[in-house]
Image (cartoon, rainbow, N blue to C red; front, side, top):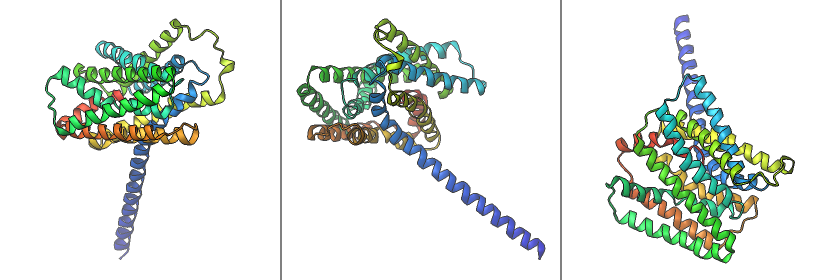
Length: 335
């Protein structure tokens, strides 16, 4: 009898621990999806606040250099060591992603509302499709892709052709700069896929972020952003926004993204692409007083719909999608 009671107690304890582990895992899953949906969507507003009193290229450079350094220290603690090939490829990726991709985005957000910027950046999957079709020469068009491309071009045309033009020259130039950055980021994605570079995604992200940060700081200095800049003039809000971008935008959200990719299909994880612009537009409206006009609302719906159509029309099978997603993890180190 005592043995039976003991065995029953052991089973009860085991079931209790299993239930707690299952609940903890569910909470972790929810947190990770919230991170890639909400945190990455909120980075656009954080960028706007950071560049209010910090020169844009310096803000971007400090962001990526700091996050890259932290990730490199983590890699060093895990006894990961980069190869010469990884360093060379990561520098090229750093140029496309951060110098030519995030640099123009940070600069443009001194002129363009964060919500509008997020909608323009959301066109990246469409650009990636065209670049991949051109370089790999194995993409096939179908009605979903054609409809998505037409819808996406219409959305961008509505934003740039009406909203930007009616708001003045600065808005137009800023919008074009964001599109240039999106094209550069898309080129970096295709390059990362074609390079077939083996290595842990954490190391590749750390190296590209670190090199991109150095390049951005060098470009800021050469471009003369230091003229008239004083650390004493930087507001607490800008410092807090920069810290948020480093800790949450780069480290927490990226870790969540990487964790989810190891456990769920890339198609499910990629749904953040549809959600981020919605979050960015809403936060810009709620906290920064950005106007959400009918044009912006319609254009955002068109672009998000276009991305969904192109994604569905080009989705590879799971066996092909999984390694591609893992290889391209570096492309979403931050939004």
